Length: 244
Image 1 (cartoon, rainbow, N blue to C red):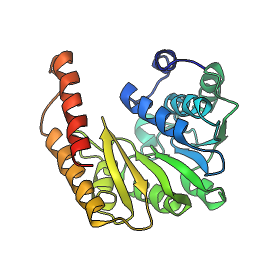
Image 2: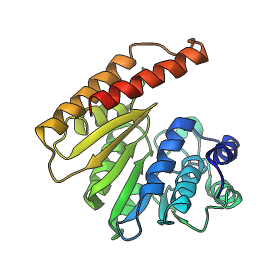
Image 3: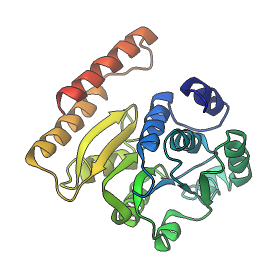
Image 4: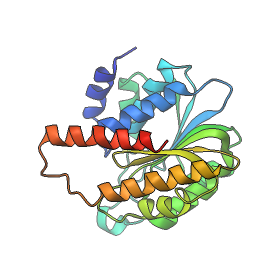
């Protein structure tokens, strides 16, 4: 199996918007999935950057199947700006070159279309489709019932100075929900565990993590030297653990 550094080197050559820390988090979550507990579903694959992290994590664990959902037509919400960008051929080539095509099963369709006929229980769901609020809401409503209690959900682009639809949806409907616990954020990704109903202590932790996330968004990091950024991330990770 490739090392984390080797996986990172592979995905560096793949077009996409996923940080290494986010990729490593997906890797570890996929590695923790157990055969028989459910499958892994990725909403929004683009050219395979996150899929490769998930695939390598799955193969380092119990090779749980990954269903990669994407119509592969680019940005359907703004075709007048970007046009239709067909990405499926490049996606297939990238996951094949990365050696994860044996555990990845592409579903070339919209999230809603895929969910309508999907019967497998889901152990890990990564939501990274169109980031406008209504699209994220639709992805959530389509797939949340299929995630088993104890399953993990990851939402991309939910932190940072930009007020994206994904960020707004997660802050309103995930951090304030009674159906999640154990929230943490890694760069722009929010990670939570689905439960039947959380406890008061879980609610307090969700709010602690939400307000910690909001506090970090007040601090511009772009021009901060790398050693300071690394130290800051360690402090944030420690603060998140304090609230657990």
